[in-house]
Image 1 (cartoon, helix red, strand yellow):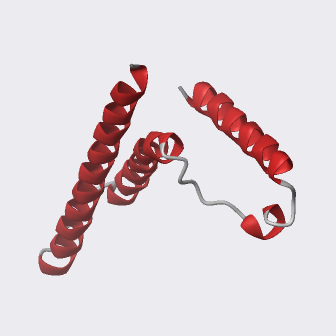
Image 2: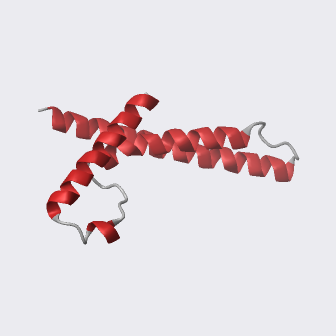
Length: 104
């Protein structure tokens, strides 16, 4: 019952992250054009881009987590038994939850 709601919520956050990326591209474009044509870039554009990118990446994390599509290093994991892999995966999910809670 709660899983479909969480999937929709995480998809909505991912869409918001995509919109933030489009906004960052637009900001960068306006700043570059302003710098070239009028020698007046947008003040603080690099800082705004950095913060926007950080928020956008954070918006994509819930969708990656709910679909279990994180980047993993499978070179070592493929040599381990399935039971050990499940344990490592559980630990990684727990660590991500703790870090997300700290960031929140």
